[in-house]
View (cartoon, rainbow, N blue to C red):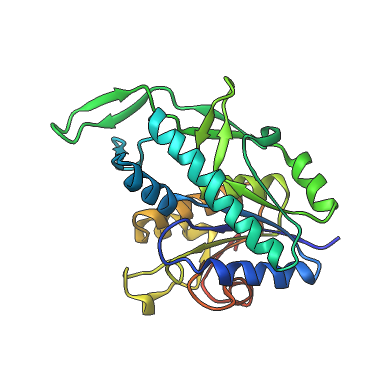
Length: 274
Protein backbone atom coordinates (compact mmCIF):
# COMPACT_ATOMS: atom_id res chain seq x y z
CA UNK A 1 0.00 0.00 0.00
CA UNK A 2 1.06 3.62 -0.53
CA UNK A 3 2.70 5.55 2.29
CA UNK A 4 0.65 7.62 4.70
CA UNK A 5 1.31 11.35 4.83
CA UNK A 6 -0.14 13.44 7.66
CA UNK A 7 -0.48 17.13 6.86
CA UNK A 8 -1.02 19.88 9.43
CA UNK A 9 -2.11 23.26 8.08
CA UNK A 10 -2.01 26.22 10.45
CA UNK A 11 -5.05 28.27 11.33
CA UNK A 12 -3.31 31.65 11.31
CA UNK A 13 -3.57 34.53 8.88
CA UNK A 14 -1.78 34.26 5.53
CA UNK A 15 -2.30 30.53 4.97
CA UNK A 16 -3.23 29.82 1.32
CA UNK A 17 -5.96 27.24 1.96
CA UNK A 18 -6.88 26.94 -1.72
CA UNK A 19 -3.32 26.00 -2.71
CA UNK A 20 -3.10 23.48 0.13
CA UNK A 21 -6.36 21.83 -0.91
CA UNK A 22 -5.36 21.79 -4.59
CA UNK A 23 -2.08 20.10 -3.69
CA UNK A 24 -3.83 17.57 -1.46
CA UNK A 25 -6.09 16.73 -4.39
CA UNK A 26 -3.13 16.17 -6.72
CA UNK A 27 -1.48 13.81 -4.23
CA UNK A 28 -4.74 12.01 -3.45
CA UNK A 29 -5.38 11.37 -7.13
CA UNK A 30 -1.95 9.71 -7.40
CA UNK A 31 -2.95 7.21 -4.70
CA UNK A 32 -1.35 8.79 -1.63
CA UNK A 33 -3.12 8.10 1.65
CA UNK A 34 -3.52 11.47 3.35
CA UNK A 35 -4.78 12.84 6.64
CA UNK A 36 -5.30 16.58 7.12
CA UNK A 37 -5.21 18.20 10.57
CA UNK A 38 -6.06 21.90 10.69
CA UNK A 39 -5.69 24.80 13.07
CA UNK A 40 -8.41 27.29 13.87
CA UNK A 41 -6.84 30.28 15.66
CA UNK A 42 -7.73 33.00 13.14
CA UNK A 43 -11.32 31.77 12.81
CA UNK A 44 -11.76 31.78 16.60
CA UNK A 45 -10.32 35.31 16.78
CA UNK A 46 -12.77 36.55 14.13
CA UNK A 47 -15.74 34.91 15.81
CA UNK A 48 -14.68 36.20 19.24
CA UNK A 49 -14.46 39.74 17.89
CA UNK A 50 -17.85 39.42 16.21
CA UNK A 51 -19.65 38.36 19.41
CA UNK A 52 -17.63 40.55 21.75
CA UNK A 53 -15.71 37.90 23.67
CA UNK A 54 -12.14 39.12 24.28
CA UNK A 55 -9.22 36.87 23.37
CA UNK A 56 -7.30 35.94 26.50
CA UNK A 57 -4.13 33.94 26.97
CA UNK A 58 -2.44 32.05 29.77
CA UNK A 59 1.30 32.08 30.39
CA UNK A 60 2.89 29.18 32.23
CA UNK A 61 5.81 29.71 34.66
CA UNK A 62 8.09 28.33 31.92
CA UNK A 63 6.91 31.02 29.48
CA UNK A 64 4.56 28.91 27.32
CA UNK A 65 1.57 30.98 26.11
CA UNK A 66 -1.77 29.37 25.20
CA UNK A 67 -5.33 30.47 24.54
CA UNK A 68 -7.45 30.69 27.69
CA UNK A 69 -10.33 28.34 26.86
CA UNK A 70 -12.98 29.06 29.47
CA UNK A 71 -16.52 27.65 28.87
CA UNK A 72 -17.58 30.65 26.77
CA UNK A 73 -14.45 30.52 24.61
CA UNK A 74 -14.80 26.73 24.29
CA UNK A 75 -18.24 27.21 22.76
CA UNK A 76 -16.79 29.60 20.17
CA UNK A 77 -13.86 27.27 19.57
CA UNK A 78 -16.19 24.36 18.79
CA UNK A 79 -18.25 26.54 16.46
CA UNK A 80 -15.21 27.82 14.59
CA UNK A 81 -13.30 24.53 14.42
CA UNK A 82 -16.16 22.21 13.51
CA UNK A 83 -18.74 24.52 12.03
CA UNK A 84 -16.55 26.79 9.93
CA UNK A 85 -12.97 25.70 9.25
CA UNK A 86 -13.52 21.95 9.10
CA UNK A 87 -16.61 22.18 6.90
CA UNK A 88 -14.98 24.70 4.56
CA UNK A 89 -11.88 22.56 4.05
CA UNK A 90 -13.96 19.42 3.53
CA UNK A 91 -16.16 21.17 0.97
CA UNK A 92 -13.13 22.54 -0.92
CA UNK A 93 -11.63 19.06 -1.16
CA UNK A 94 -14.93 17.55 -2.26
CA UNK A 95 -15.13 20.17 -5.02
CA UNK A 96 -11.70 18.96 -6.19
CA UNK A 97 -12.89 15.36 -6.45
CA UNK A 98 -11.47 14.17 -3.13
CA UNK A 99 -13.74 12.14 -0.86
CA UNK A 100 -12.90 14.16 2.24
CA UNK A 101 -14.62 13.44 5.53
CA UNK A 102 -14.67 16.08 8.25
CA UNK A 103 -14.54 15.13 11.91
CA UNK A 104 -13.03 16.23 15.19
CA UNK A 105 -11.27 14.27 17.89
CA UNK A 106 -14.60 13.99 19.69
CA UNK A 107 -16.10 11.84 16.92
CA UNK A 108 -15.56 8.14 17.55
CA UNK A 109 -13.20 9.14 20.38
CA UNK A 110 -10.66 9.84 17.68
CA UNK A 111 -8.52 11.79 20.17
CA UNK A 112 -8.90 11.06 23.87
CA UNK A 113 -7.29 13.59 26.18
CA UNK A 114 -6.74 14.39 29.83
CA UNK A 115 -8.19 17.75 30.77
CA UNK A 116 -5.78 20.16 32.45
CA UNK A 117 -8.25 21.03 35.21
CA UNK A 118 -5.71 22.87 37.37
CA UNK A 119 -3.34 25.03 35.35
CA UNK A 120 -0.56 27.00 37.03
CA UNK A 121 -0.13 30.40 35.33
CA UNK A 122 1.50 33.78 35.83
CA UNK A 123 -0.93 36.53 36.78
CA UNK A 124 -0.13 39.45 34.40
CA UNK A 125 -1.36 42.01 36.95
CA UNK A 126 1.24 41.17 39.60
CA UNK A 127 3.61 38.56 38.14
CA UNK A 128 2.64 35.99 40.76
CA UNK A 129 1.65 32.38 40.15
CA UNK A 130 -1.98 31.31 40.50
CA UNK A 131 -4.17 28.33 39.60
CA UNK A 132 -6.81 28.44 36.84
CA UNK A 133 -9.51 25.76 37.10
CA UNK A 134 -11.98 26.56 34.31
CA UNK A 135 -9.65 26.03 31.33
CA UNK A 136 -10.86 23.42 28.83
CA UNK A 137 -7.58 22.43 27.22
CA UNK A 138 -6.17 18.95 27.23
CA UNK A 139 -3.21 16.68 26.62
CA UNK A 140 -3.89 13.93 24.09
CA UNK A 141 -3.35 10.46 25.50
CA UNK A 142 -4.75 8.14 22.81
CA UNK A 143 -5.50 8.17 19.09
CA UNK A 144 -8.16 5.90 17.62
CA UNK A 145 -5.90 4.69 14.81
CA UNK A 146 -8.34 1.91 13.89
CA UNK A 147 -10.97 4.48 12.89
CA UNK A 148 -8.50 6.39 10.72
CA UNK A 149 -7.22 3.19 9.11
CA UNK A 150 -10.81 2.21 8.30
CA UNK A 151 -11.43 5.56 6.61
CA UNK A 152 -8.16 5.47 4.68
CA UNK A 153 -8.77 1.89 3.54
CA UNK A 154 -12.12 2.95 2.10
CA UNK A 155 -10.77 5.90 0.15
CA UNK A 156 -11.59 8.79 2.49
CA UNK A 157 -9.32 11.71 3.31
CA UNK A 158 -9.96 12.53 7.00
CA UNK A 159 -10.04 16.25 7.80
CA UNK A 160 -9.55 16.62 11.55
CA UNK A 161 -10.40 19.58 13.79
CA UNK A 162 -8.19 20.05 16.88
CA UNK A 163 -10.76 19.03 19.47
CA UNK A 164 -10.39 16.03 21.76
CA UNK A 165 -12.74 14.29 24.19
CA UNK A 166 -12.08 14.09 27.91
CA UNK A 167 -12.80 11.19 30.26
CA UNK A 168 -15.93 13.12 31.28
CA UNK A 169 -16.92 13.41 27.59
CA UNK A 170 -16.18 17.14 27.43
CA UNK A 171 -14.79 18.66 24.21
CA UNK A 172 -11.29 20.01 24.79
CA UNK A 173 -9.10 22.46 22.89
CA UNK A 174 -5.85 20.68 21.97
CA UNK A 175 -2.72 21.81 20.16
CA UNK A 176 -3.03 21.03 16.44
CA UNK A 177 0.68 20.45 15.83
CA UNK A 178 0.99 17.93 18.66
CA UNK A 179 -2.27 16.30 17.57
CA UNK A 180 -0.84 15.85 14.07
CA UNK A 181 2.35 14.38 15.55
CA UNK A 182 0.38 11.86 17.59
CA UNK A 183 -1.79 10.93 14.62
CA UNK A 184 1.30 10.43 12.44
CA UNK A 185 2.81 8.23 15.17
CA UNK A 186 -0.36 6.17 15.63
CA UNK A 187 -0.66 5.57 11.87
CA UNK A 188 3.06 4.80 11.51
CA UNK A 189 3.21 7.50 8.87
CA UNK A 190 6.41 7.96 6.92
CA UNK A 191 6.06 11.74 6.72
CA UNK A 192 4.48 14.56 8.71
CA UNK A 193 4.22 17.89 6.89
CA UNK A 194 3.56 20.97 9.05
CA UNK A 195 2.54 23.92 6.89
CA UNK A 196 2.75 27.40 8.36
CA UNK A 197 3.08 31.04 7.24
CA UNK A 198 6.91 31.08 7.16
CA UNK A 199 9.30 29.03 4.96
CA UNK A 200 10.40 26.82 7.87
CA UNK A 201 12.79 27.22 10.79
CA UNK A 202 14.65 30.54 10.49
CA UNK A 203 18.02 31.06 12.14
CA UNK A 204 17.38 34.83 12.29
CA UNK A 205 13.62 35.33 12.42
CA UNK A 206 12.00 37.02 10.47
CA UNK A 207 14.82 36.93 7.87
CA UNK A 208 13.53 34.32 5.41
CA UNK A 209 16.98 34.03 3.80
CA UNK A 210 18.17 32.41 7.05
CA UNK A 211 16.15 29.22 6.44
CA UNK A 212 17.59 26.14 8.16
CA UNK A 213 17.09 23.34 5.65
CA UNK A 214 17.97 20.31 7.76
CA UNK A 215 17.82 19.52 11.46
CA UNK A 216 19.03 16.06 12.53
CA UNK A 217 17.55 14.68 15.73
CA UNK A 218 20.81 15.29 17.59
CA UNK A 219 20.47 19.05 16.95
CA UNK A 220 16.86 19.50 18.08
CA UNK A 221 17.89 21.33 21.25
CA UNK A 222 19.67 23.93 19.13
CA UNK A 223 16.59 24.19 16.90
CA UNK A 224 14.45 24.89 19.96
CA UNK A 225 16.83 27.70 20.92
CA UNK A 226 16.47 29.24 17.46
CA UNK A 227 12.68 28.84 17.33
CA UNK A 228 10.39 31.40 18.86
CA UNK A 229 6.68 31.56 19.60
CA UNK A 230 4.59 29.17 17.54
CA UNK A 231 7.61 27.68 15.77
CA UNK A 232 8.86 26.33 19.10
CA UNK A 233 5.62 24.35 19.45
CA UNK A 234 6.13 22.92 15.97
CA UNK A 235 9.68 21.83 16.80
CA UNK A 236 8.38 20.15 19.96
CA UNK A 237 5.71 18.39 17.89
CA UNK A 238 8.39 17.27 15.44
CA UNK A 239 10.44 15.90 18.32
CA UNK A 240 7.45 13.88 19.56
CA UNK A 241 6.82 12.56 16.05
CA UNK A 242 10.45 11.44 15.69
CA UNK A 243 10.31 9.71 19.06
CA UNK A 244 7.13 7.97 17.86
CA UNK A 245 8.85 6.56 14.80
CA UNK A 246 7.90 9.03 12.06
CA UNK A 247 10.81 9.13 9.58
CA UNK A 248 10.76 12.80 8.60
CA UNK A 249 8.95 15.97 9.55
CA UNK A 250 8.82 18.80 7.04
CA UNK A 251 8.22 22.41 8.13
CA UNK A 252 7.13 24.30 5.05
CA UNK A 253 5.49 27.43 3.67
CA UNK A 254 1.73 27.29 3.04
CA UNK A 255 1.72 30.68 1.28
CA UNK A 256 3.33 29.48 -1.95
CA UNK A 257 1.86 27.57 -4.90
CA UNK A 258 2.03 23.78 -4.58
CA UNK A 259 3.08 23.96 -0.92
CA UNK A 260 2.92 20.21 -0.32
CA UNK A 261 4.66 19.11 -3.49
CA UNK A 262 7.48 21.60 -2.99
CA UNK A 263 7.87 20.54 0.65
CA UNK A 264 8.09 16.88 -0.35
CA UNK A 265 10.62 17.86 -3.03
CA UNK A 266 12.95 19.45 -0.45
CA UNK A 267 11.79 23.03 0.19
CA UNK A 268 11.52 24.11 3.82
CA UNK A 269 13.08 22.48 6.89
CA UNK A 270 13.47 18.72 7.11
CA UNK A 271 13.77 17.19 10.59
CA UNK A 272 15.04 13.62 10.49
CA UNK A 273 16.61 10.94 12.65
CA UNK A 274 20.09 11.54 11.23
